Amino acid sequence: MALHSPGDGRATVAIIGIGNIGGVVAAALLAADRHNVMACARNPIKRLVLESPDGTVQTPLSIVTDPADAEPVDWVLLCTKTHQTPSTAPWLSRLCNSSTRVAVLQNGIDHVSRLTPLVAGATVIPTIVYYNGERLAEDHFRFRPVGNHDLAMADDAGGQAFADLLGCTPFRVLLSTDFKTLAWLKLLINAVANPITALTLQRQAVLRRDDVRALSIAVLDEAVAVARADGAVLAADQSRLSLATLLTYPPEVGTSMYFDRLAGRTLEVDALTGAIVAAGERLGIATPLNRSFQTLLRAISDAAEKA
Figure (cartoon, rainbow, N blue to C red):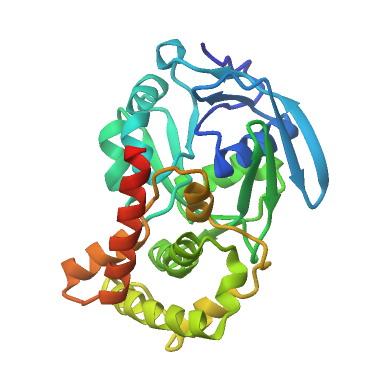
């Protein structure tokens, strides 16, 4: 299946992964009706419902369930979990060519190196996702803005092009000349929010416990040391600032890893906690608390994979 650009400025956009993140961005683009949008997913969903602070909208959805039916598009938005990236290779090989741009809406700090071998010469655009998306049903999503921005990308040609693509949506976009630091700042948030909510099976209210806050600071101190060694420019009291940011989020908000554990799915361990541990090993910095989280989360994820 191909999306045809009629020459009126409408881009062709394929979204891989209609989950917490992909469902929200797909529904927002469809509601704006400025581009030709299709979803790439296993199940033939016919519509999307999006709840947001501005109200609820419902839009019809064009969906392709077989990579063999896909053709190259102007934009691919990759919205699967990071550890699911290899499974998207058949889609990427059909959707991409040298003119395609691939915006990566995933966690982690190594988007370009991971995706370049899979995208047939397409331009890879790393992004940072700040908004909270929650899948309420197969076709029903909730969008919660958190913080000052919903998405961030580098202030370069690719980032500016993606910001333009999203200009018709409610997303608040930040363009930055120091994307490395922004990526690490997001990873610091994930370093405590995702593991602790997944391990305790509690939403972010658990972070308000005094003992959990103390643990969070210790975990963040390790991660901050690694981030600085990797070139991120951070505040002297960055651990405290990162935790303070987390505590501004509504206590009822869940994390992607929390939702995955509730659903019995494998966990995105290596792109979050694992990325800190791996970078620490590369840079010669010990991360015993993060490594302990990684061990426990891997045990949970491996059990889910075998179930």
